[in-house]
Length: 435
Image (tube, rainbow, N blue to C red):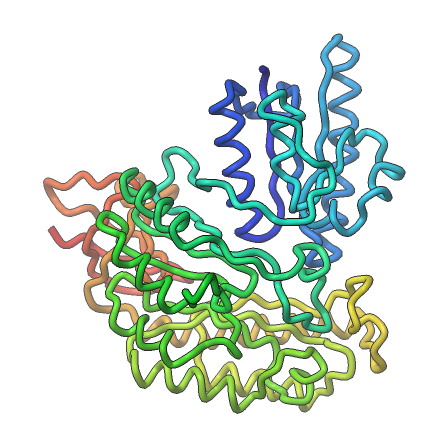
């Protein structure tokens, strides 16, 4: 037994899996280290979605090599494990180019880390099936991720996920509900159900709408249920109805669009049109008027014209997103988009992205300014760094507020309080707690 250090990159699924590994190691007697310099076991949980993520990890591998050498000079050994999507994508190439790595472990085999740590029985070094753990909770957190499925069957032409995460596999609903009840007993306030294509969940006749209702029924202390990330093509009317009728489902949805051009969506293999996407949003908003939206948008895809870029802007204007995750197309070796005609120079992709970001920030500010009123239920997250007399929190729409505490009240992180929104300051609302 010794100390371990985990460094995590990428998606929420990676964060959840790192939490699970940490929990299993600590239950086996290992102790978390604050710094790799103090650690006997270093774990890097990697991401391959964009080249920039991989480049950052290559840089960190150099730093970890230096740490290993320093510790070796003091007579201390360090085991370096690299896992996650980059491990699946590059495999043996990693050990060749970075010999400081002791083990390269893919997503399906992450539990092998327990064997390396001297915990548990010997496992296969080439597991071909993803395994869920019992819980992904991190002690002390009041917001928690709950993976319900892994992998993707869609093969969007730009995406590496199906190649590194594999085909879709859904988690047993009884295991999910067991974890939800455990989190509820720990007074967790919000949970996010996770999957690369979360609303295509299917397990022995239980689809995602039914599972979502089961989760809501299992909650007492948990106030908000969220899910990431749904695919527009799998967003059914049944799911809309569950969201509308279940108070615990947060009325804020992240619905990736990627492009507002039907031709580009077809090249991306997204399997929906601009019209289908906008109709979906329209139907959700008609049934749930208080709904707000977040979106994923990609620009600079091979062949995208200025007119098609403008189609994306017009679609975003029609929906009115309060939050957007924006990026330019990043070639991923092994995906179909890499070989497509009409490749756009990186400089032009960067410029187009900056125009998109500038536009979205201005548009979101206008929308959010109209929402600076009313009383909101808020999950307290921390004391404000700018004003020690104020607390920070987020409402069910994910909007941050800095608020004055009501006389006689003493809210702490994890509490749910009512806050009156007064004005918008930048991207943060200013408010007052309602006693």
